Length: 164
Image (cartoon, rainbow, N blue to C red; front, side, top):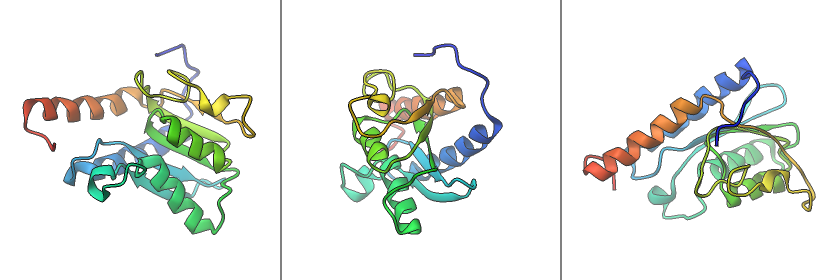
């Protein structure tokens, strides 16, 4: 799913670099390399997360949820108004729902998830008008890099040289 996209904001590109760094932190576990950061209204990193489902044995330990939890703890508030969630892969239904519940007004993501994406591909939870909060979505930021990280991970798993 690669519709014509407007030019990428340099700030979004830089933030995606932080999410990519977070994704690489999964290299010591068998977790899929997905990373996320929550950026405050002033551009400060408030929370960072990476997939830790395998590491923690927690099905909700997705990168986005980890970053949202960290940002909320840092702010001492569950409302992350004015913040931006930046993630290497299109959020799933759970993560899109978590960002809606946290009142995050903008989600920036890299690669599309054609099987489980809930931010415009399979579902569009972030812009569902029947919900109480809507989110601006900026897709495709550093998409090739984000997709390559996932392709390489799954290729290594299939060949037996990667984490299982």
